[in-house]
Image 1 (spheres, rainbow, N blue to C red):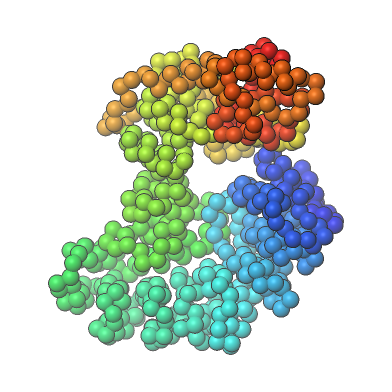
Image 2 (cartoon, rainbow, N blue to C red):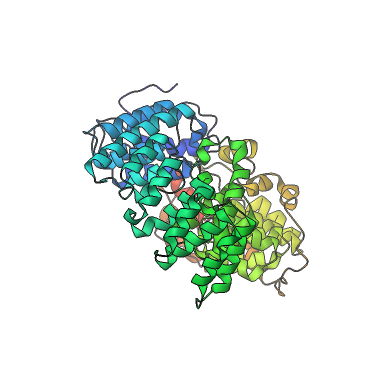
Length: 597
């Protein structure tokens, strides 16, 4: 159990957390100010990076919530307290809801802290957090009550001063909240999205003119989804006077909820319009899916994945992804955030085919579904498209591995040559591609001489691959990085990844030239290369080594810059520097390769 003290609580053993995440988190916490001074500079940057990198893991250790409770204490700086509220997003519990509820209702709480606490109380999504993340029902009730008090105060005041509160409320399905919104629907247009009670929906419809225009499409869909056929007479009666976009939405809802008898009104509206055929296709979809308002149904899932048992999420996310993509076959989503919600549902479904459908509708979403999208392209043999996408997304290592897996080894090696980092995926891609390109000798050398660096787990030294972190992943989360397990399994492990190329795949490159880059790297030639002398040189003669570097035809660089070919490890060097060099592809000069080393 973590014990509170003047500094951050001790992390303890934390066997449920990967070793590198433990190390990174502990290192970041050690830099945090404990005297109330401002959190900025290196400590802030290290904390932000540790929180980002650990997001997928820390929720597996509920005791780490104590870190967040310590961070939000009033004695700390505003930014540290705000970061504590973000940290607690990973730990939904009764205690978390109570503490944050107290925080948001305390007039003395600084606004940035209150805003972040408000968001955390409403946030019911899993996204990239640990799969064990789940809100208990009692915690939801406590959080909803705190949010309701904030909303009620804003309603009485007639003004919403919080930017986070309306969007936090989009996650909340609560009669309390619905009753508060019903008192001033025009005030709360930004909070209305996926959840409403029938009484609220009726109020929204009669007050639709009070809803700001940018929110009306969303509100109309929620009214239809909530009231069903009851809404049809209201929709039809109001449609004639509504602006064209709202009129079309009302008519489509009427068709969905009331049937084909309302097609005539739609046809009258479509007369002379561009894209009328596409809109008729949408009407046909609604007739075939009576009573379904797909965007609302999809958002109900997307907003509440952290309320569901983990075993149910993939199936629910598949349905939600389909729902959020349905209407884009006929019209673009009016609000860009819907594509992000769709993307997170695709990721929750872990489905490459659905990733393809998302990117086809919204190319900007490639970043959020990158891995799945590249996998889909490789499965279908779209070599050129994958190469461009991988380079655009700065994922040459992942793209190269997918090409190697799916039978395009020469294209894989060409793409691998553009990668910026020496990752397990890159090494695995090279090893598999060389074997499939007829160079098993190069594969053997890669697996014995050119493995990727391990992750840092302590300050003493960088362990040989696979280090403690990689071994933990292999044992506890093998699906997280299949390349790590494959490399640890040697040649049989790498070859087990191979799949046949699809019958209609684009041809591989006609030249073996891409193998030359691997040959050059494994050749370890110093002429024309760059060398960095890393660390302190107390016993080793730094000047003599520098002269030997120049005599060998290489050039010294004065920092661990990207693109550096080799480094000489001094008598002592920060493990972080060595890790940075090796991640960038620099290789250590071995004993005997250079005079004085």
